[in-house]
Amino acid sequence: MSTVTYLSLLRAAVIRSLGPAWPAPVGSTQLRIDPAAEVTDGAVVVYETEGMPGTTWWLVDGVVPSQDAGLVTEQLAALVPGSVLETIPDPWADASPPTGTYGLDTP
Image 1: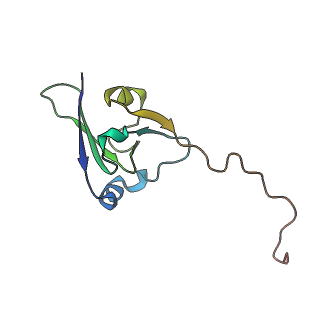
Image 2: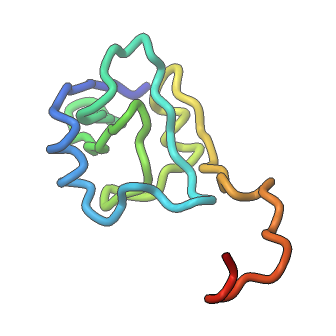
């Protein structure tokens, strides 16, 4: 049984700490945290073994993206109660390609 601790931090500080891991790329997985945790920005510390150090995951906008701590997987989702594993969708997947001819002289 794992123990999970949530820490609230400033969103800007979390984003700085995530560096190039934020925003997460389209198609990658992220872990959406249960809103009952009442923390949207900060850290999620997962203690897998009692008496041993835990792993700290950055949390921004209610989600844990893959980061230096590791990839977000089903194993992590199983350790964090109420969390849901998601794939980041492509916002342009359903968009139609532009039609017509465009150039520098097109009004």
